[in-house]
Amino acid sequence: MKRTPPRYGQVLGAATAGAMLSLVVGYIVVTSLHQAFVAAFDLPQSMRVPLWLAAGVFYGGVAAVVVAGAVLAVRIALRDAPHIRHTAARMTLLLPPAIAAAIAAAATFAWSLNFPLTPSAIAAEAAIVLAAFLAATALARRWSVTAAG
Image (cartoon, rainbow, N blue to C red; front, side, top):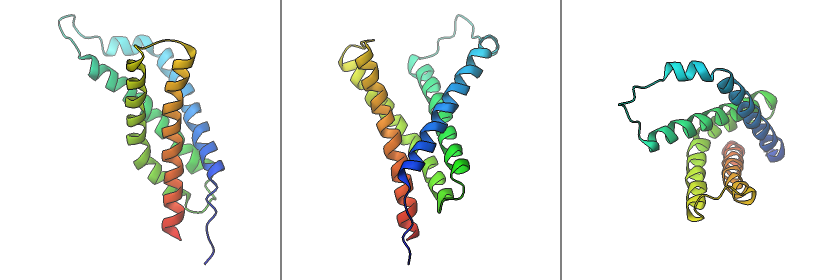
């Protein structure tokens, strides 16, 4: 039986490109529709939304956009690669918990340093999230090619 080449570089590249493109498009859409969002979700002054809920909705939305962009990019750009449908499906399963854990780890890191806004601290937080994204994507691909073999 012939072993399926994992093509990790192509999968990671397509997923990263898709995630970045979806972040940029999402940012442009949110910025363009900012006033509409404010009008649609304008709450009365007496209503207080817990900070954890607001942060959860914000980061959850960003994570959903990243996952959707990464999965679609892998599925479309590598449509002829063996077992790519399985890889995309497994990315859908693995990326949300990996990104959630990475966001929590990055927030804990920032909290431990009293939330500095220095370039090195922000780069470290971004690296934590990126590492989790890449690890989950690589694991999804490995799972797909080893389960098929």
